[in-house]
Every structure is written in structure tokens, then in C-alpha cells.
Amino acid sequence: MMSISKERLAAIREELQGLIEDGLLNPETVVDRARNPNSSLHDHFTWDDTEAAAAFRIQEARALIKNVEGAGMHRPEEFADVLSHERRSGQECLRPGQIRPLD
Image 1: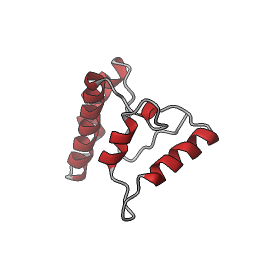
Image 2: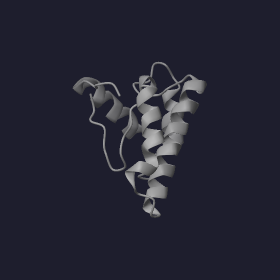
Image 3: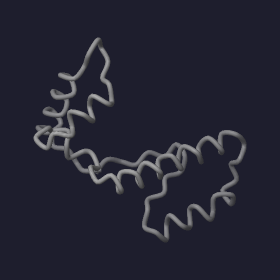
Image 4: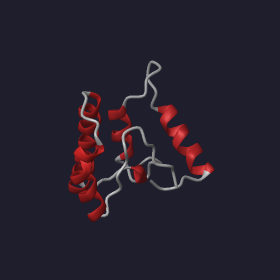
């Protein structure tokens, strides 16, 4: 994730606040607004559908791993093949509960 300047963060916050309806911020509304290249939100989304689909599947895999671990499968060796593949492919590997720091 890219680093966000204070000015840009303020513009994003203002744009998001303008999208709030009945106290709620709808993710679909945010994506619709972000489609506009002039939106302060635009550069924070992956617009290449192939790339976005691959990234989403990685998120789904993380959720699946977390759910399976929560159901009792929690020995590190059970995930060794998955972790090894992610390291070889250059993909970042986060352990459940680990948060990646913002750049």
C-alpha cells in the first residue's frame, strides 16, 4: 500500500464523508465514486480486473486459512507448503492476526 500525504488523506476523508448516507458509508458507493480517474479515491484501487481478481483470491485464501485454523487446525507444519510457495513466488505472507505496517 502506498504512503498517503496529509493533504491527500484530507481529500480522501472529505470525499468519503460526502458519500455517507444515513450515517453509513456503503463500499459499493465508494467503488463507484473511485471509478472516476479524477477522484481522490481512484489510485487506491486495482482497476485491472485480472490483477484485482488474483488479489481477491489471495484474500479469500487468507480468510479460509484463518477459519480452518480457528476450527482446530493450527500446527505450523500443516501450512508449511503454503508458506513455502508464497515465499518462492515473492508474495507477502502474513500469519493470522499479523498486520502489515503502512509504508
